[in-house]
Each structure stands twice: as structure tokens, then as C-alpha cells.
Image (cartoon, rainbow, N blue to C red; front, side, top):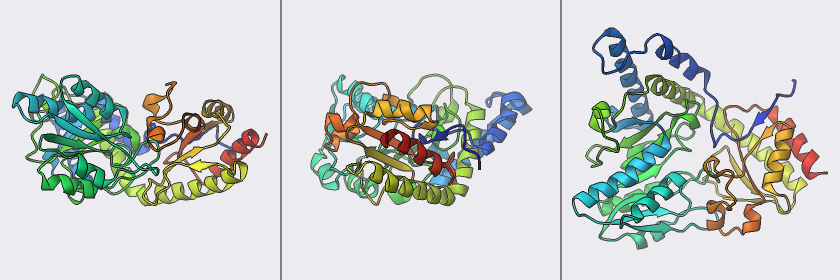
Length: 381
């Protein structure tokens, strides 16, 4: 088999469009382009497509279709939750305490910073050296004025899956709404919102083969959350703006394909990750795997290679057709070390020598030979 032009190992940042998504979107980009609010046939067909996609997501997450609200992605969904709860509580003169964690995505962290400037108190839960939140820390942080807890289902840098079910159960005993950012998980592991016991969940289409600019927020029926944007009456008057029909349809098709291929893709990811760890350790015996946990997403591998600058390695690997990253795509180019790694106890120097390799739908078994050859040329030089 001929080597590929490049081997993509940055699936946590984004994924290519699945063929099913491309095929599903095409009619809604050039033929069935009517506004879903219109009364003529083109609008009715668009509205039907959105409804069917909503049912697809509801089935995948184990919820009701009316509990799914389409957004532009994970960032909007996260902002909506944090700022929406803050605004609602402020209007009814309720509590002013929100709990989140030190490892969260910047969409959550920056939203919390924004509401903190408006007078809200934010508690940031620490993590252990393996990149996992502790239930006891959450229990100690809960207060009578806590209005929301927001903790990610799995970390975007290490892939470590968090004890969300136990944490959500704790919040439920106090009647405190629980939100989870599941952007890295949807389409990659089975998710049932009732089983998890959560009240809100954010997801993003481009993380599982859907189009960029598509996402959703699950809001459990009965959970109060006012609209984030003012405008029309779309999304049952909770999210204004003409629906991105093609994006929603493509995201739904991508989710269906992801669920169908989930077991096969996860098995391949585990095999590629295992082989990569094996020979990377031979090339760099003092390599550190960040987030050693049995409960880790199958495609994530976060490694510290002491003495090797991550920025230099990324450029060298790029020259050999291997695409990797140093952490969150939303923080790329930042001179600061990963906030996730430093929270886990890694030093500035260690964080600067850390790569994130994330396997996924774009990979095949033969990729391991190109990956190994490239690393041997660089680390073995």
C-alpha cells in the first residue's frame, strides 16, 4: 500500500466530513433551500429535515426530541448555559455561585470569567495527577447559593473520562442543575442522559464528522434557561435565528454514521494507540503518558517527551506528513503552557514538551508505519 500524503492525528481538534454527511447536506444547499419557517413546499421540506435530525439526536442521547436545541457549536452551547443561568439567577435575585473545574474548555472558563466580573462567585474544582475530578471535592464545594455545576464528560487534551454520573447524582440530591460539556464524547462513546443523570449537555458536529458551525444543547424538560439570543421564534423560542438546515442535516447524518461505526473505529484507535505507545517508549524511555486511566477515550494519547520541544516536533512531523498538536486547538499559538497539564502537576518545561495525538475516523491500520518512520527519523536522529 502506498503511503498517504499525510496522516491525520488531530481528531480531537476537528474531523473531516463523513461521506454520509456530505451526501445528506447536498440537497439542502442547492435544491431544498427554503426557510423552515416558510409555508411553501421548500420550507416545509426544510422544516421536516430539521425535525428528523432532532429525532436522530434524541434517539442517540436517550432524550425527547423537544429537549434538543440546535446551535452553532459547542462554544455557543457552553456560553448559553453559563451566561443564561447567571442572567436568570440575577433577574430573580437568586444564588450567585457556580462550580466548574480547572481543566474545562476555554468556552466554559472564559464564560465563567465573564459572569464573575458581574459579581458571581466561581469555584474551580482541582483535579488529581491523572487528570480526574474527585466527587469529594465537589461535595465540599457545594453551597446553599450554588445555581449550577458544569464539568466536562471527557477532557479534550487527555481524553480522561470524568465521574459525571456520581457528580450529577450528588447535585440532584441538592436540586442543583448539572451541565456537562460532551463535545469530545458524542459520537465516540455511548451516551444516555438519563443514565448520567445530567440536566444539560453540549455537543459539536465537527468533532464526529459533521460540518463546522453545527452543534446542539440538550436541556432536560423542566430545566429553566432563558434564550441566549433575541430574535425570531426558532427552536421553540429559545434560540433565535434561521436554522442552519444543511448543517443540522449533515450533523445528524454524521452522528448516525458515528454510532454505526463506533465499535470498529474505537477498536482501531486502541490498536494504533497501543502500538504508538510501545515504540515511542523505545525511542524515548523517559516518556510520560498524561492521564493514565482505564477510563480514557480510545483515540486520545497525550505524551510528554522530555528534552523535545513540542512546537519543534509539530513542525518536523508536519514536514513528514504527520499532523499532531500540542493540546487544545482553541489554545494553539498561545505562549502559555496547557492549563490542563499544569493542573495535573506538570511543570512548565514538561508542558512545553507535550504532544497530543488523537486517532479517529481518518486513520487506517497501515498509518502506523508512516507514524513510526517519522518519529524514528526525528527522535532517533
